[in-house]
Image 1 (cartoon, rainbow over the protein chains, first blue to last red):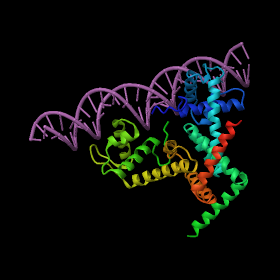
Image 2: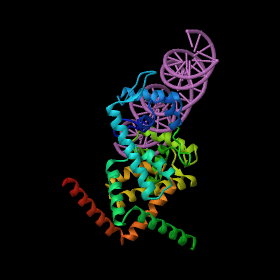
Image 3: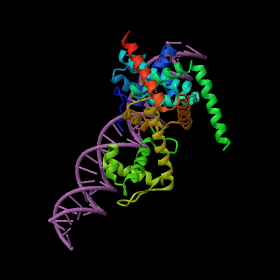
Length: 156
Length: 156
DNA sequence: AAAAAAATTTAGTTTAAACTAATTTTTTTA
DNA sequence: TAAAAAAATTAGTTTAAACTAAATTTTTTT
């Protein structure tokens, strides 16, 4: 599989880039060790991913040197990160999915969901929340609906 | 990447299996050529995928012989197919996404979406449609909402 | 029924992404 | 500051999934 996406990066490399941003946001320096831990891969895999991201100018990389994001890298990583949040929120807050499952799906979907669909999710979310008089009310009613549905099913 | 999913098949092999079912449903015999065309891969790739599916007992495969689905294969292919439809419908009918984009996303998501999230999508769909007095009304109101939103944005 | 055409398979190559083991560099500590 | 520990990198291997080109088998046509 070539498996190349929107901006010319594979899902895998996008994950590494996203993690670089996440670690930078939390700590001062980016350690390959941290990235390896978060993604559950070996340090060797992190090195080769960082080299690939360096070649494509998404990060500034030199062996044993400090890692920083280029402007391109920041832009792309932020874009992916924002998709991640939007998707997680859609599944978790609107559909009421388990937070862990919502995260998991978002983590994969973020790499290939078309912008049009993302926009539609947002618009729909706004629309429904507005129509229902707020997220809280909507969630309560939906929860109630689900409970009744399950009663119906068990009552058959 | 090992990239193995729920039932021990990769997304790629699940796509081949799904396509076998689709072709069987439409034609009498399954031709490697048809599968190659649908998936946009070479005939050689189809052969090796069919061999892999044969080894794992999802299809009955022997060189140059007729291809059929095993019971396991039918069950799994149908499951994926049904996920595909549910997802496509969610994005297309509820969110109003372009049919082609909805298909594309569904095609990838079907391989790793957790059942809980799929169930939530269905329940939410039912809930919202019921609350809105039918899908037609909902779609009209949502379309109107989107139009107004876009006016707002352009009016800034 | 033999030749031609089409379809399938095999053989061998490529690529991306992972791994382990060994080496090198940096950092910490005694 | 020298030795030990930790971290990062390199070298080399593995796997899955694609590809092309060549060989084989099946099907069709003359």
